[in-house]
Image (cartoon, rainbow, N blue to C red; front, side, top):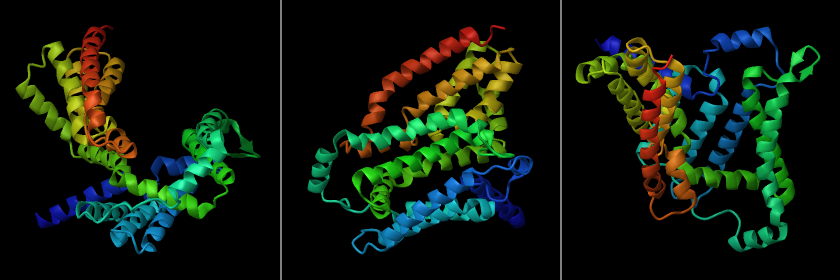
Length: 358
């Protein structure tokens, strides 16, 4: 039993590592096969390494800041994250999993915090803003512009016999190029160098804190739950408790489960495989002949209703409140509750009307 528990622990840690690690550790699989068939000049690996370097710079600046209230814990947090993001491709999933556990431990023990104040004097910032005017907005528009144009064109660019970008990575690579273009234009416009960019970017990252990690962590949790067979257990529980032989009950169970699991997990993408395998496919598609395309689409929308009302979706609901310095951290959620309820009811009605029409 002890050996089995140890093995299950390592498997769980590895699963989290695969989901959080930049390149999935040494789990290349089909991605590695694609790289072997079509050599590309620009891959996501470059941007993951660049992101790791930025995080490492943030961690180094925090370690050098003697006035930081949580100096060493915060520095360790961002340096561990830099290692997981920047070197995840070359680390085993188990190692990345333990790095994630280290990050979680630092957060749980309240060792991570933000520095007080900004790098540049607020008076100087106001003077520069008045002098630069609308030119400050140009880098913001450049990022999505490059991302959209690159997403539409990079797939067709070749250098000799080599592809510039893998077709499946075009959108991400284009966004990465847009970010590089935006930061370059921002530094040229303001006259500041990379150090100030790292300091101010690090200040923003510290303000966001652990919420930066939440989407990846929740996606990893959803993957672990799927591998653990949670969907099958939910199917047995729902069948035992609810009369799912009635179509409207099956629809209510699926839409309600998507919203509830999203509230618990904070991510509709993490809830989708669990609820679809556990409730949607067996009770809507197989038992009542429902349309899986309609079911999946409206099921995700029902999950998004849960996203609107949960603090677990911190990047949507808590981060804006912090950035806007609202007094109530839950002000965004409170404003969204009535809309979430109305949209969820609408989804249930539309699914019941449309999913069984074939």
